[in-house]
Image (cartoon, rainbow over all chains, first blue to last red; front, side, top):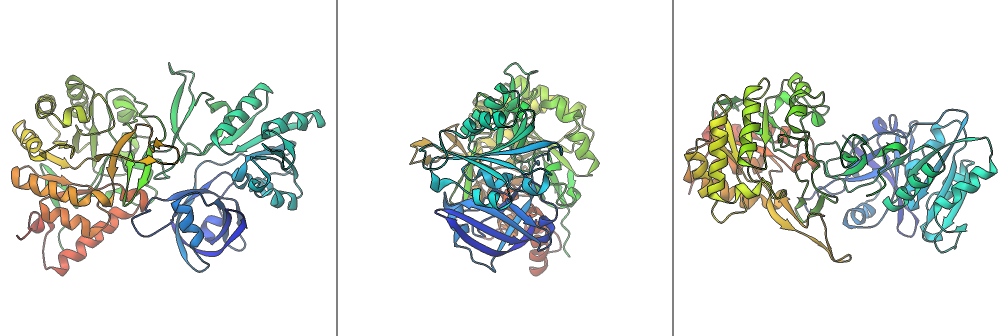
Length: 262
Length: 307
């Protein structure tokens, strides 16, 4: 737990914001896929912490960056904060994405601002990350430019066709494979649950492997309350699944654990 | 510095501050934050005879001044808890004083689980019998809101347990909680703990759906504290049993209210989610408060409310 000083809290576009915390102890240790659990308000009205994927870190400057969307009371309060104010952070928490071997191409598959959670892979993986990003419409694409700035191959799908291919992000996988015969890929997914389940199904059908970051409403963030569970495959159980905590057993789960019938 | 040592039934606790069941996992989740021996006791999440999945998602939502949960007592079952790597064997190594919260879906299961913990009690200081979870259909509140059934469960557990102190956790979702406190006393409980969460509900008006899948859940956090203090006060007047008081304790001043109302010890619950160090801050405040008011021992303020 640390008091982090806000260095920047700026508008990316629309309801998307970028907040930079000065918090050296976390900037040094955070890995792709992990999150920080942020106390938004000292008052009791919105007392529960909010989990945010760690978008980026700069160990030299001691900073940690989160990208968030204003969706509810907590993120509204966060958006009002100004540089110099402090936030109480728990973290880095949760399981990490596993950087793939040097001869494997890392492919981040993001729904909306799920692209925030996979960005550290651009620093952790030897090969350039391919980003497949999907959103309802162009204005909901987030951080695609940041990936391009790192030299990543960025491919876009939108539901309404306003940018990139018209359709779902999973439709971008087959063409990527077709263009690169013989290459090995490993997939990293983050986004809304229906998108992740579709991604898991597609990867399995194509015989591909990967890891997905499962997002649930969270309470304690440290495994104590069992409020944030997700169903994972369990062949030994009669119902073929059991619950695991997305905060400590996840948020990153290997593809083989993803239970499709949520 | 005042003496925080707390005699609670047959237990001697280092201080009166414990962690409420369901808000502190199996203890180890918080062992990275501080030495669990600093607490009066760790009360672990409820255990029954077999593993249980708990309720569907979403299970929690925030409301003004608190939260609603319907976890549904997900747990590993008694065998895994007693012998599994991530449960009691590891918790014992921390040196913490451990109180095991337990439940069942029938009077027989309550007795069986209690007997099992009593027989394999190495590392267990006491049992807290949960007859008050509002989020499981069979068990929990079915027993805790019916005086006759509550009496049967407490009596069966009492007969099954020879060594460990039995603390009965009461539900606030009743017209008169003192009836249940009196039943606990009559059936031989060593102590009572109160309150469990208040039955509650919240609605997402955009989706026109309940905000938790179970529709209703248990309200906890700062917003329930005045109700809890009132009930502790009433039970303290009604029975001689020691009371473990809880419900919305967020800071040391809150804990003092419970002690003054008649609680011998307290549990910090939802506040753990906000600040993992909340129980330690309560202990520090108690020390300061007792010194400031020239009390030599925390026991001097138990029930010391002046009317």
